[in-house]
Amino acid sequence: MTPPAGVGRAVARAGLFSAVLTGVVSLAVTAGGLSAPTDPAPISPLTPAATPAAVLRVDELIAAHDCWSGDAPDPTVIPGKAVVTLPGAEPALLPADVGFEIWLEGRPGTVHAFCP
Image (cartoon, rainbow, N blue to C red):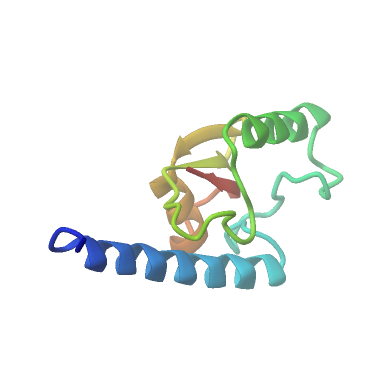
């Protein structure tokens, strides 16, 4: 049985997106985290200035929404949400576009993880 027209192309795009995302996430993690270069103090369990409540909130959001940092658990999953901390705000689950703007375009904030 052959797939409908265009399905192969969509699958290939999803695979390419996942491969690029995995490579960029790996590079970003290797370079020191997912935060934008202008972010002075990313909130993470390794940052002493992070309040315990903020670290706990990030961990809760990641666990509750099956999020990941680093390599995506399934290369066919395209992020729909992101756990981020915007300046002056508490960590929150927001659309993935916000996470990509922080991560790739230098918007102020910290990306903690992407979610399906």
